[in-house]
Image 1 (cartoon, rainbow, N blue to C red):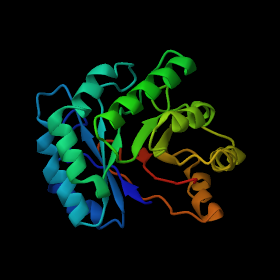
Image 2 (image 1 turned 180 degrees about the horizontal axis):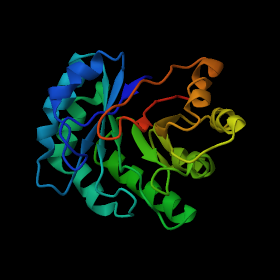
Image 3 (image 1 turned 180 degrees about the vertical axis):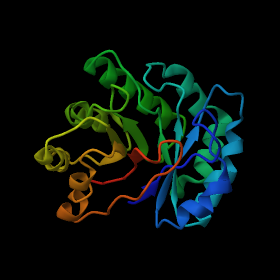
Image 4 (image 1 turned 135 degrees about the horizontal axis):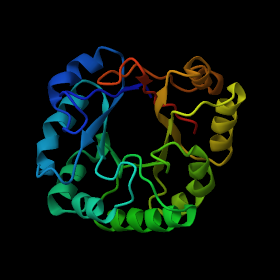
Length: 236
């Protein structure tokens, strides 16, 4: 997968609009993250235009809630995802949609991460949501090791066994660390993506998909475009 991350408006505090999606498609991205918020008073139905435009442009939309970024407040997000309006929208695009449950959460412990996300995954499946769900690492998305350690248990807890794990690699790693990360995910049969990464060590990171015979990442733009690129690197 090659995806772009590009807010349409001036800041990440506003949901993405379909206005930038045709431009994102020109980058060659085949998927795109769509910022969304449960607490801004905007109905989930307002996201449909962006979802439909992404699909029309040949990109897989990844709809994600940012209300719990660097926090641990999942209950309100789950209520939003499982509302009748949200379930109806998700089911309409079931063949062309990924749901990122909560961007860059901050659980207090590995045990709480596993226990709470197991509950969340099962609640959302019971509500009729059967698209792939994406789960970010803790420490504002940076803890890839937690995903490797807890991913198998979460996958087992999911009735559909259909989860994607996303790490945001902003911390410097030794050159061999990237390869070890992907190899470990592959060994555990986890689908791991690199949702975001900084411009430190990226030349090493972007070579990993070719080594594994997977797709490569694409540029991301927006308010951090000089510092951040986003890649979606499947390790499964």
